[in-house]
Amino acid sequence: MQPEHHYRERQVELNAQREFRLGEGKISGYCSLFLGALSLLAVFAYLYPAYLTTIELRQAYDAVMLQQVLKYGMYFSLLFGVLTFYFNRFKRLGAAGIGLTLVAFALGGYRIPVGPVEPVRLSLGVDWLILAFLGSVLVFMTLEKLLPKYRNQVILRPEWSVDLIYFCFNHLMISAILIYANYHASHFDWAVSESVQAAVQSAPVWLQVVLIILCADFVLYWEHRLYHEVRPLWAIHAVHHSVEELDWLAGSRGHFVQVFSERALVMIPLYLLGADPVALNIYVTFAALQAVLIHCNTRLPFGPLKYVLVTPQFHHWHHGSEKPAIDTNYGAHTVLFDRLFGSYHMPADHWPVEYGTTVRLPRGYLAQVLYPLERWLPRK
Ligand SMILES: [Zn+2]
Ligand SMILES: [Zn+2]
Image (tube, protein in one colour):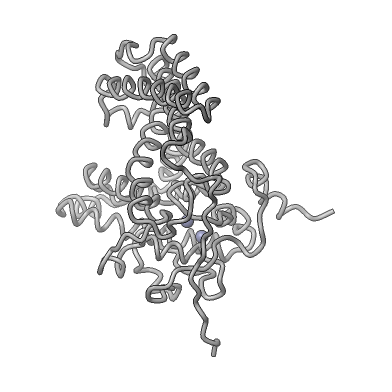
């Protein structure tokens, strides 16, 4: 019998240098820089929509209405930039934000006419990147500030910029990921059953959503478990586990091979079920929000839902590096398959004392992308 594990409370020291405090100019500087960069990206997307926006996403938003959002983004970037000069601190960030916004204005700003877009299959998801970034900051960063699990953990935690690169890559690649995933699923034509699809479509939408969640979760559970338990695969998945402080951005860290393979595998049940597009859209939105939420630094209470759905506490345990947490909690959406297949770990009110891998990975983006090769190739 295993000796009983002694759970400890995780201690996070406040890093005053990295902290954001009101009235210093640092918040203004970063707001100006990020709004300036996003504005410039948005202007490029308006100039070259065929190559820089996503077909699937274009149907979901109103490009003319978003010009108003861009307008406010540009003016606020300028305002925040000027504020850094008022505070007389972090002026470089402010100047960079103002500079980017002025270039955006020079290229046409929010007045670039919106017309019909020639559909190009493979494009960069600049629109998806901008909308996901703004949405995540608004929803998840606010949640982390209002209901933090670790109040002392700062927004600019170590390696946030590495995770921002992963975030950008995953969002820009959305078209390529979808093309690959659809191509992969099309190999399962032989398994399509018209009677199964007809039965699924005759069910109410909520039931279709539940069905999709369960089927997707089953596939994702086993995909995830294989990534942990098959040695060569672990070198790829270890990248996701190398993050040592979890927050909304941390979940973006993942080797591109894992990102592509995960989407390709989950596409199989979606393809075979042939559910109503409304149910499919609800599932995709739910899955995207849950994937970010479960990495968040939040103590948001879930009540009885925590016995059904994957929550931040449950997935934080998956990232825990303490003995009893290793290779547990593989579920992506629900706790069902961890319960069924004996990998469930949720010790009452405890949270992990430490996150990360037991063998430390390189800390840079490129070094992490190459890490699996380093592990697979024979050492000299
Ligand atoms: Zn994992
Ligand atoms: Zn994770």
